Length: 221
Image (tube, rainbow, N blue to C red; front, top):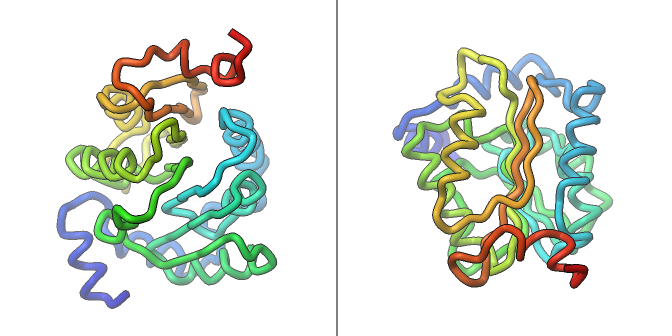
């Protein structure tokens, strides 16, 4: 992707692309995703919150250096992970080079969201949506819903503390997602540090959360 492409994708607002380029310029893992206990624990909770033991095809935009990608790969028969920064993608490719069912691609959202011909039963939006304006979040959520197969899972997790470069707070992003008419929230976890929500795109509109729970989907209720 050229610099002109990235500038065009940034034109709608939100966090400028230069922020990410600057973050990766001096540090290979600027958020220390591979080293911090906080991240390892959050990832464990993320994986535990997924309602299905295995997914046919997962999509993880904003994958950074691929730490969470490596964990999601164990739950997906196919996984597409992407990031806007080629430096991050290069590290993710190296980390996951031994996994032939994982693709790592440079993409800038929302312009490069996968086309309507590519469908997923899992979309993971981890530490991503607060970089966008509310209008762009609405568009990204619509894209996620369009990409999700009926019965598919959408998982969100976001840092709650104030960051000057974030266009929105985690609380605002999760409130907006909970209000989406095509999604049903089946699980949530909140701490002072982060929010985690799990949604299902039901096969039929108006399906209550109780009929989409893990126990219900497993025939236990």
